[in-house]
Length: 562
Image (cartoon, rainbow, N blue to C red):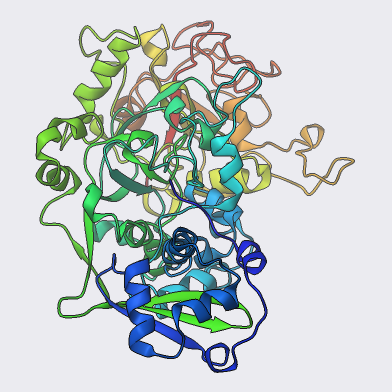
């Protein structure tokens, strides 16, 4: 059991005092050895070597009794919680770390530029990232929660009751049985290379059981699957044994904040934490693997300093971070040979997502007997080049952007991106895995026109009583994102005049097979209401405000790339 020692506790245990010779000395002991050499026996030996303070003198100054057990506990606490750099020291607070590991926080959504948002982690990386031992994340704010129970005697922490301060999804005592951790990033746009994922291992994401990370997503039950191809995702991780835990805090730093500091990697797979033990992370095909060690031919130095009634400890080490010989799955199988198959449930291997998703959905009674030609489409395998998922529901879940002005501007820019090269607007595509009518499982919206002025009128600057922006519908303003998600309107949006609809990409390119029937303007009903190839087709519309109505509850929107 670990016992957290705080500065307040140290102060309460300390006495102002007395011995001039011993009390005037700053460094009273120094231990040189491997990462596990900081302990009571070596501390006493170092005191004798230094000769500045005797054991009785220093413990009298600290107010620790003559009991050998109390003295050993005091030093052990210093070695565990003061000598290593605490993970929280890198960013500065538990809340910053908590939000970061969940995929958010100021590094992701702060309003300042990247240099201002990231200066703390940049500073740590440049000065201490490879010169000190770092503790596994642990926080005073988590101790009572991890140990607590509710009125029925059940643990407050859904991962299980424990006597520690480990954060969500990283509790070494109760929820990291495979002794393997991983971080997965979906955004590489903040680093020195805006397309850094092109130079590293990326993976397909299969699925995520949302209950496995309920402390991050706040969902008790649910699941998400990611069929077909998504935007590049980089996962990296590490594994350890009981006897090799001294540098797992460094490895977590290397897999998380170090990559954020040096490459700008951020943001989590939707519904999942950004970092955690693999039991709490999404199932993916593969992950890169990292190792850490003290540089060959060097030792770790632990220094004990006394000042004003307090004893503190620090360390200095030369840490080398390097790639494993293979990926994370191969490393796990080599390190944990007696349980090598356990990692298969989390890392399914190249091309393994398709079979894994089918098996998982069969377990959830969402049965796959065969492969439907019009369901579960890989959008990039049916002609054309398409964006990542823009917005969607169900198995293609992606919530709408809450910043309505920003999302409208982004939709307009994406539509207009094809004008210079194709002399037409880019097509918008809705893929609907749950739609009952084949014509509605893959619909192409082709805007008519050759200039941005042919798009519906955009945001005009109106705000509501609380100062939030609103689109003035009476003035003809259209939120392009909402036009498809929740409000399929006729304003500057008439079939055959402002746009055409098609059931295939080939038809859209040739102009053949254009739909001939459409209706509009039912509040809360989105694309395409009852529009159909030759007449009305009911209940295949989507709505993000009327979930459960109709059949289009599993769909996603994509836009053609220029």
